Image (tube, rainbow, N blue to C red; front, side, top):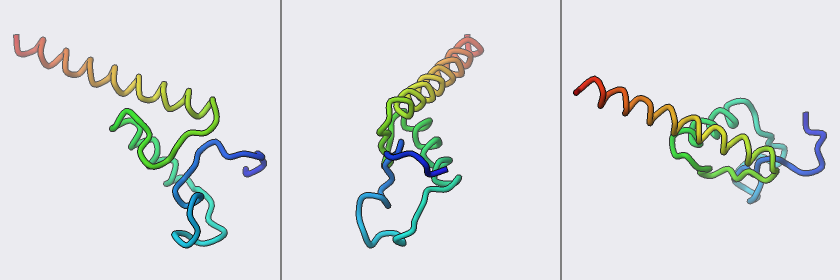
Length: 81
């Protein structure tokens, strides 16, 4: 809603002038990209979490992704035996 004094996430477009329009605001696809890269790389890539709750949510997402991957690998190993 844009009513917070400080942002929760720092997008590259917010750090340097000239790489995006002056009135640029993050939208759904920006957040979807952050979620995808966080789940696949297990860490933030280009968007940094600034608030504690954003850091916590990104940590939880990485843990869930890592556990899912571990379960899939464990199941595959079990099937091969």
